[in-house]
Length: 425
Image 1 (cartoon, rainbow, N blue to C red):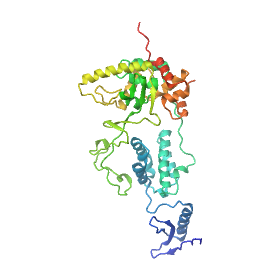
Image 2 (image 1 turned 90 degrees about the vertical axis):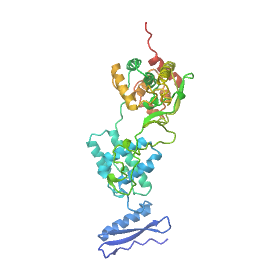
Image 3 (image 1 turned 180 degrees about the vertical axis):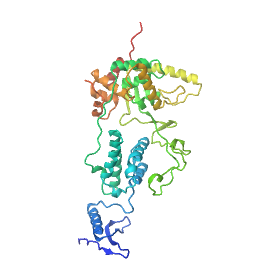
Image 4 (image 1 turned 120 degrees about the vertical axis):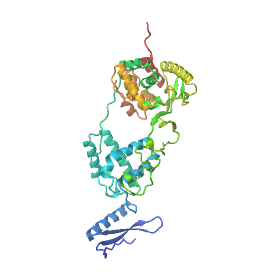
């Protein structure tokens, strides 16, 4: 095969130097030629050499004007990420990009990005006092989007992978109640509606969304089991009046036309649901549990008894509602059967901790407490992993600070430790 000749460089009537470089073949079979024009021959030769190197390595960028980083990220969030990421997660991704990435590098073309751009982004975030975890997540989002752009031939490299020191987050130490503190919380909860809601968190480690999304049709009190197949989740609305993307940069790209800043106030607002999700009221939905958390778990006898009493009270509330009770089948609901907003559940938890005179740990730390107390009672860590439905044993170890037979035995121990009340003389 004859060696390809170096492209001819000519000076044009415009005073610039021009060259045409063939870098491959287009989809229609015609040669893919790139026009190079610069002020000096040396600049043309530098660009020609760059194109020929890309051709040899098979990394030639697709023809056309490269997108800016902001244009590509918005396209990525609109068409690529939704296939694998929850809409609420994408909402959070967009927020981080708009707050931290776009102001520094949003208008930079993909082919002109350098490792110094993410360096500047992360340094500015650090100077603002943002948490290491936030910086790490921003890096992961940016790196993933740029990797997709690289694989699609939109850029010759992923600059986020070229950093000498990637952002790293310190391991977060999770808090947990002692057995005495957990008992004080449950005792204080006895005088409140939905007291069993806190029992399922502290005794069997249900996540907040899993507890609030628990439905009676998935609870078998006779068999002493529950199917953790749903979690309650709040998803933000999106504007339904987004203008067509015209290729503009900056905030005008995909801007809403209703004039309202909050998507929840948009007359054409939309709530994006994925396959299998159920909208209850407003932005509250039911979705599958996180990761591999969908499973059937045993209920300790003491918790079965408590849930029976809870259902009796709820049945009375349905009668008092006289047909106005929402038919969502929720185990834990408001007086009218409507779902409990996670934000209000969090406020209730803080008030409960205050009433019990204990430290105000996070709601999610009730799950940590369940794991810690199981280990303290000698339950094998593999069984704790099964009860909490962790995909890997390393995750379970992250919840445990103290030194199988079956998951049923583990939950029975928790029931005896936390849910059996001392008799009143």
